[in-house]
Length: 367
Ligand SMILES: *[C@@H]1O[C@H](CO)[C@@H](O)[C@H](O)[C@H]1NC(C)=O
Ligand SMILES: *[C@@H]1O[C@H](CO)[C@@H](O)[C@H](O)[C@H]1NC(C)=O
Ligand SMILES: *[C@@H]1O[C@H](CO)[C@@H](O)[C@H](O)[C@H]1NC(C)=O
Ligand SMILES: *[C@@H]1O[C@H](CO)[C@@H](O)[C@H](O)[C@H]1NC(C)=O
Ligand SMILES: *[C@@H]1O[C@H](CO)[C@@H](O)[C@H](O)[C@H]1NC(C)=O
Image (cartoon, rainbow, N blue to C red; front, side):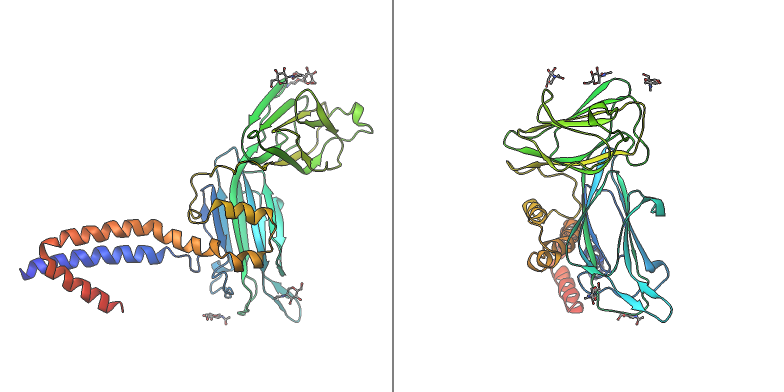
């Protein structure tokens, strides 16, 4: 009998302790960087929204987050303001800094953003690539009271494919994404191509098209341009034609469709990057595969983005992102913990007095 009690007690305690540590260990504490592969995610400086500490170790001085998505996806990053420390010394100034790179190599040539000091406005960073690298450099040596940053990302469709020598039509039905000239941004577009992209959204919506970068070969008149982009709400009536290097203004379709046509001649240049999104109508369907955002309603996210809240208001009034992060990480493993617990209880059911004893012992020791 005594042995039976002892065994059931041990089994019970092991299982419970395992579930317990799994849950508490997965809370994001001071984790400095990680790799992410899901369609959405959120990450932040150590301790955010509390002030971050000075780095204890040399490795801790650079936190690196890597995002890797399947090919055909681009990345939309949101930075909800930032607040970084700096130290003025006699000969130089140490600035803590956040850097964003458009690939996973984190090299100087692929760096697209650098942030120092502080700002409360949020920033959207469009990356027409399925990989990105975000680095946080803690160069200051003392503890200050600066909160760091919080960022989230989302996968969007990336359409950079086009047939060479001949026409090619790509049909797109996503609610937002990138369209880019073939090869952009790593290489110039190919010669002699005819590419058409058709974006079609639900009947009650329209499509907004924003050119983020536009660099075609130079010619004095658009009428004779060998390289040009045409855009319109149908393929019969392209409303606008763009050439040269003047970034076109935002285009909004009259119907639920946008046709974008790109033709090149024998010259080459950097090309273009377009961000499109559906406007109005029914809300977008949710993207599956989110790691952390399960408890943050999708509608809040859209609202957050479209009303252009400042980061301070966004976070103070809607602390969703931070809490949801901690809670959902824990609850995904607490299912496991529950299974362990039930196993533990079942295994000791034959000896209820024994497991009750364990319970009280366990609870007492954790008080
Ligand atoms: C924000 O940056 C400005 C300089 O750009 C600085 O004067 C100010 O003290 C900073 N605020 C905080 C809270 O660090
Ligand atoms: C910063 O604060 C942490 C925790 O309070 C402490 O361990 C660390 O030594 C401090 N660093 C410096 C440089 O004072
Ligand atoms: C495309 O056509 C041009 C001339 O029309 C030719 O020089 C080139 O080799 C072709 N490229 C491919 C990939 O077929
Ligand atoms: C490319 O587009 C032009 C203009 O619409 C068209 O006349 C031409 O036939 C197309 N070329 C090919 C190879 O499809
Ligand atoms: C426009 O697209 C329709 C199909 O959506 C097609 O039948 C028609 O031939 C196209 N017209 C031109 C000029 O490409």
